[in-house]
Length: 425
Ligand code: S3P
Image (cartoon, rainbow, N blue to C red; front, side, top):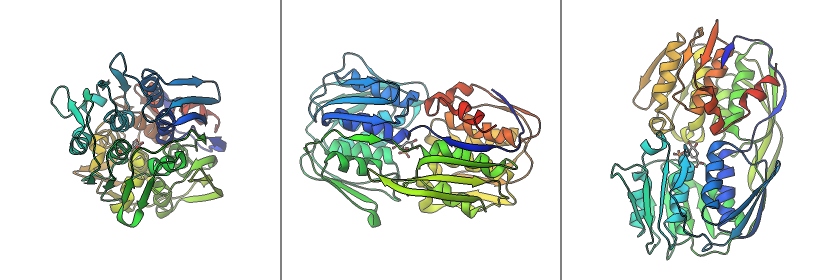
């Protein structure tokens, strides 16, 4: 994909359904009793991998243009998969599914692509093993492929060393199958879609946000739900940034999830001086939603650190792009988790910003960026969807032409990304 500088992005768009919520609808729908009807499901490669995994464990999942229907078989209704479960590029599928598989009476193996199979899985192997699960890294390198055999699970309290919704959700899902109560505390609260949605499905789950702790009791009867998935704020983030940094722009993004555990990007945009307004704020199935209006603004550098980091972790590539054209210096700290995403995003972001002529320094847990003028360059996405999208927006404010290599990787979370962009021209 080749892109050049532009002015005046104008219009109203909507973004596809939230990736985290779409995964969870399929998983919880599969282990619930009755039918789960999902609207605005994200048909990106990651969530389609989740569908395939549950289909190969005997769950009937029907897809039409607008709806996905999951015919749940209850907590103990999954059947042994005949083949290795293929989780593709998806960390969420791998880690959440492992929590469910740990509680099954059958053996399973799961494996993904090269990037996925190099991401850390000890972070789930250790707590699941403490719960009595039988889970191992087949190559003994702490990564997938994973092998899971039946085990007798018991509840634990787990003090997670990382703020990760995937780790937290994995343990809570195993807790559905464990004797006694299971609880997880994390250093800072990560996205809480599992807690909100499991409650809607009927689970006995409670949270103490002040202590970043969630508690779950086992063997609930879960009931199928009707779910309208909110637009993904992580996808909206690219158009929020475009509206703020492309000259003479005004963009309205409709029906976006603004759950406080996900919406750190909104605060950062405001703190940087962005003109951003939330309209029609409402709540659906426990999730907050709004329409987001952005207008071109002159941004300035800020420091981003501490508890806000988990609420914007996937948005750091696009925040870095905004920082690269803001006045002054932006410092991003406490974000070492970036190193274990689809790529090492400290490296992929800083290498590509440098290629565009930006003054940027990678650090152990983030980066320091001084704003200036960007120049067209070849962007090495390393097949990371968020790098492709963030640098497509950088291209719009750079001199000359920018080439996004392997831009097709946007399919992972936003197959229609370039179509949405065209609606604003
Ligand atoms: C996700 C949690 C986050 C996020 C990922 C989706 C989820 O990962 O980066 O894109 O759906 O739970 P971590 O839990 O590893 O922080």
